Image (cartoon, rainbow, N blue to C red):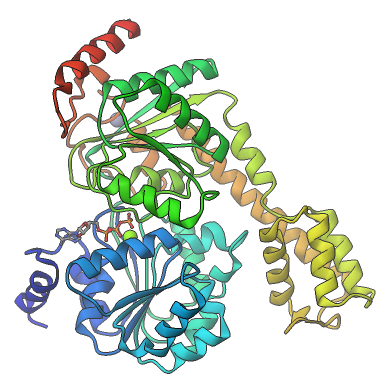
Length: 506
Ligand SMILES: Nc1ncnc2c1ncn2[C@@H]1O[C@H](COP(=O)(O)OP(=O)(O)OP(=O)(O)O)[C@@H](O)[C@H]1O
Ligand SMILES: [Mg+2]
Ligand SMILES: [Zn+2]
């Protein structure tokens, strides 16, 4: 396609005159029906790489997307631009809504769905009647990050892709080390893949890591920052309780800020409402868990604070990737206490089922005296109802063909071999996860440039920062003057409180 023609489509459908780095190459490959794997930094416009083809190709583009909020947000944004032939198939739809959508499924050019939806036989059979022009796996790192533990349906995407007769595939992510890239490709088994890997560092984000000695000190530091910088802010926590607790403290103390909390325990409606209010500037500080973030496209977030750090560098990069999407300077701050690593460690330790439970369950199967449903019941009792543990165990049994169509087959492996394989799988996963956590910890204690150390996992060179780099190189709070939008007389207050924080800091 001649250059100007593709640009014209971009202009017509999105109102942009130029492609950003990577977009055009990726779209051209997609239009040529190549299989594509692309890594582009957070917020640089991966969505357009499938949205524009969806508008140009005949047939339907299917997008597998990990989060409800993300799908809803994208459908809404596309509809607002006048593109109506888009829908999301997800668990928020009522039975009737889903039925209607499925009946008219071939009228959509772009269809978002979760990996779980993709496992439904009914949905798959409807999808099979479509001409699928492109099969997209957005946020493809989730395959590696979540698939192995609590969303094995991520590992089953390949089966669905095959059932749909292997349409051209596009896998997109912003955060994948070379190892993770390989894991994604192995899982998706993409033949003849064309790779587009772009540097992941964002020059407009500065890095600050501050160690505190007490929890109270952490709370005070946080409050000071919130008071001094009235900019759209995300604060990440590793537990729902802590997010809610600290949000309440901030609500009580910081009357000039509109604070809310957001986590996976809230119901879908509340979550969407908070997301909308944040987008519409009715809220400007969100205390959240990692349930909030990925794919959220609010352009003017200028501050991302980690009250707790995540268990791997990829998650950290995703989370700070919410900041500075409009190109304005933004700051990432981690507040940490030397014992904070205990929190992610505990979370990791609970991610997979106990090996002794796995052994007991295998024994039940191999003694031939348990039905599928009884086994599930027994298992759930043993793991205190932790559903993801069941999903993991079930997936492993299916993978080994010990379980097929809810029937056990003990001829696939002798008991001892089956147990050894499962044990090794679990141990290997733990080793992998602990290595990831260690990388994160090493970064926190880096003595050199934080930016260089952070991105060294992904690439050899980094771009020159547009503003301050990090607290090792040149960052100083007193030199950060973020543009504050709603000044409504708060300029004075802001400067006064800035003086306050500087004074206290002395
Ligand atoms: N060529 C372009 N010119 C101007 N703006 C663009 C262009 N391409 C995308 N954008 C805008 O960039 C923003 C971010 O896009 P998008 O959400 O697709 O990013 P992303 O790479 O998917 O990010 P994430 O990693 O967070 O999912 C959107 O507001 C989009 O409209
Ligand atoms: Mg995206
Ligand atoms: Zn630096």
